[in-house]
Length: 230
Image 1: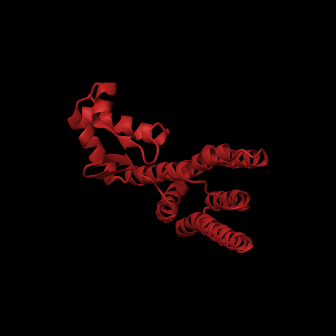
Image 2: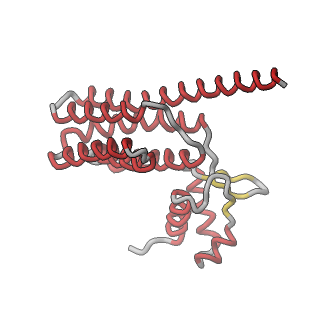
Image 3: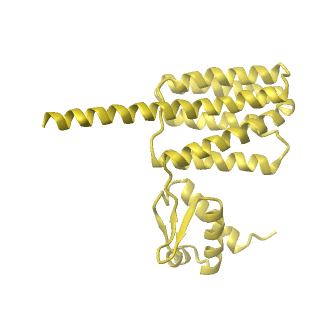
């Protein structure tokens, strides 16, 4: 089946946003896109409305379409949603994950430890996403898994807008991954698997939020001290 021009335009824009070609705050100019890809304006407008509905761009009068800029609140909302989606998808996948799937998940978790030891934050993040998408992938619900992937895409875009970090959390998350896999291999109740997986993501949210608050407070104190010294 031939892919429509609107779908082509959508996939082009989505890829440009995700790979950083069009980063947060970048204005998307239909005429320029049309010349570059030889696609008329109507498909671009349709794709932009679709991306706006999905939360990837903002469209404003007299401005046009701009790639959405994410902030701390956006990240927190996205993490809460991802926690629920990922927890449910993992629970539904549990009984369908093969021995090979679980062996691959454990290997990804081991590689995360290696990346952490080598101070490879980018590699750690990529492996973490692959780990979670793998244990969600057998949920037998295409719509649910698509939402999980979409929220992971959003997480990656947000992390290009700001640097999210909580000391010690990465190492703890590896241990939590092992616990989730142990529950799955042990045939634990799906509700328990869902709860533990959701708690894993919420703990990351809480750790980063707490660290951000501490950092902000320290900077505020330092700023007052500097002003007093002048």
